[in-house]
Length: 112
Image 1 (cartoon, rainbow, N blue to C red):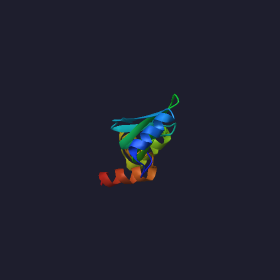
Image 2: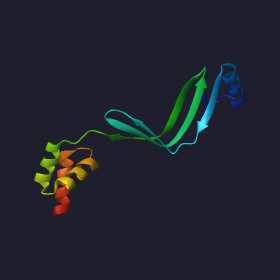
Image 3: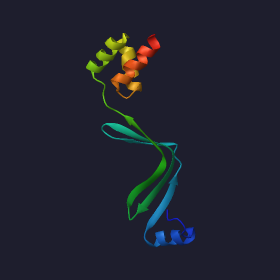
Image 4: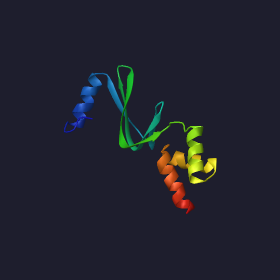
């Protein structure tokens, strides 16, 4: 928590301030937002209780996943331009986070 500080002294100081610290053995942490998910893999999670208020400190490998909905119009555009089914167009759009141009190019590349 505080680099270079004696761990025993740190624990005593935390105890005097009414703080407790607990390491959580987690394999992944996901923070869900309205338009995306923040995914933390290989996390180091610490739960800190200070005067009844619990907080979490998290570090690890961070990635983001977009949750934007793909419109029917985008699906139709990709399906028509790449000459594939709507289902295949949707899967490719999801894989490419809704990027129409990238999806069309990818599908055309595999269809030739």
